[in-house]
Length: 177
Image (cartoon, rainbow, N blue to C red; front, side):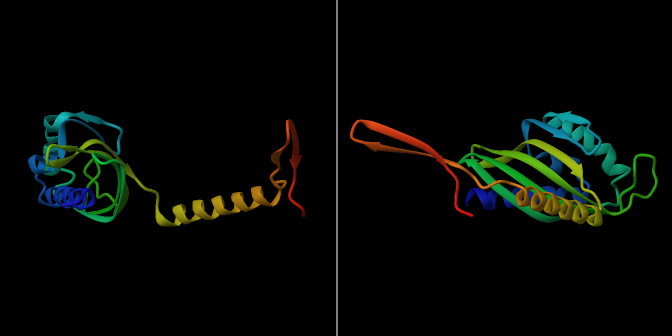
């Protein structure tokens, strides 16, 4: 099995454990000494801490929730280390005060490493993503800013050095307009 396949399997196992509201199975996707930061910025340390932190919320605010992975991007940094972005959506959750939580979209950012024959999550940061209309507005604004910057940018200059026998000549040149 390739690293990408193993990491996709890890992701599917984590999603299935969430949807069963099984804190133990959820925590099994993490290394013994993993760190997990949730969307509120609360940090859980170690596999046991991650299990202990998820057990009560699976019985309360997430007991009817449904997590769906919508996209996963894996970048191998080394053969045994990967940076992974997992986009997700969630329905039927409740906020910490017990009120219905609107459908959500988020991003899990992981550092995943191979531990023997298994790939496990060593670091996980979870974040809510803004509403799609805000994300589209930000993308449009970024494009406008890039266009404005490139429209006023002078052409790139280059430093050119030539050698004639023992003599070195150097000049700065600009491309022709």
